[in-house]
Image (cartoon, rainbow, N blue to C red; front, side, top):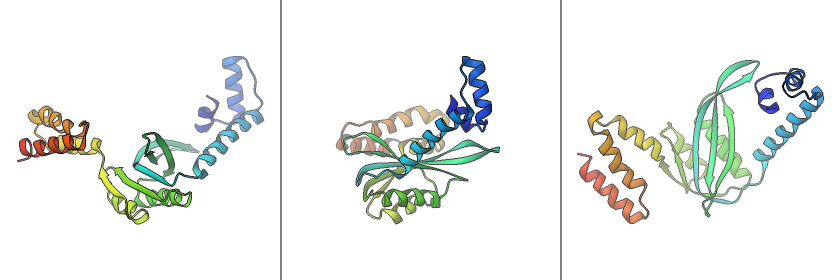
Length: 196
């Protein structure tokens, strides 16, 4: 709770007063400051830790968040999340930028490379203009695939209202298939039955 209050721009003295009123426990403002400093150091350690040399899959995305730095402003949180060869999720890096941009993605990817990430087999992202090019500038051998959430949204948007349920059910057979062979067969059937 202390960190959340601090992130909202509340002073350490005000946080100490809130904690005392809620829990009848008083912390000096300096103690509050020390707690927030520990979190800042952990965040810095995350951004600068060495990276594994390879990831099978890296997801790239951005979302809008409200940041309080004097005033509340909308900023864009860019994040890189990987899937290791053993299937575990791993936050590679993140950054807060004024808006979603290829420059922001390139900066995060370049920083990951400097930390030791040499090889990425596949990037998965949305259809943001220039995202694929940004990935391939830093990791030219990596492949790029549009994420299924965004593909599904696009198919839904392009489908007549009365056809949405059966079309999406047919599409779901592709991305829930247990093998590549089953996925290819489902994709073939999707195009044969749905796409005219």
